[in-house]
Length: 268
Ligand code: GLP
Figure 1: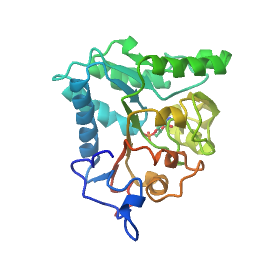
Figure 2: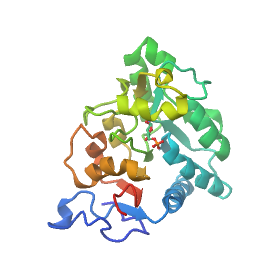
Figure 3: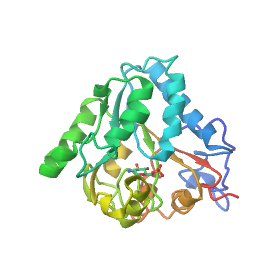
């Protein structure tokens, strides 16, 4: 069983209350941080420690506002740790955008991850959106193969959508799902309007790794900040497990740890 994050009280949310804590698969693996920066710093330090012990570590990297601080904190630590041999795979990509499009996830990761960490562009692999448009099955298979050839993901970073999506595994996703093209949920598209300027500009489809792809990672760190995430996070913490809130499908993974602020944890 994974160790409890260092700065976490034993059972911060009382998720083990009213029964045998060992029956709750998440018991002891949830850290509620007073400020989000402490969550960001904790996870960045874990990544730095991982790379120190395994210079060729394979990271699964996520996009979204939640991740910006993690990458910022990792960039600070990059001075003391050699990142030149890591490889990173991203979770998903919009269809219909070129990799140079500033709204693509490739562009996000170039500017928040690759650049600040001083990585080579080839150290980051992202789904090929134009291939996914032309031949979704082949592009999806190739992405899964690429991850497997790299030896699998050592540590997967994850955010969570308000509707409980992880990567772009939207409500209705199956635990056995693998990389595929998916139609985006309307909640997800509405949440992206801030970035794209209007709903019409938000793509309707994306290529995403599946829940089973994520479950193959050795370690998973799910971060969530703010009250807007509390409902989805509450389902992850307390169940029930179900594809209507896809993040709950990760609960049984022994390497899953959650790093939350008080808002996302549903605390005042
Ligand atoms: C997008 C990404 C997810 C991410 C989510 C949350 O939908 N596909 O991987 O977790 O946004 O984004 P944010 O961190 O900005 O709330």
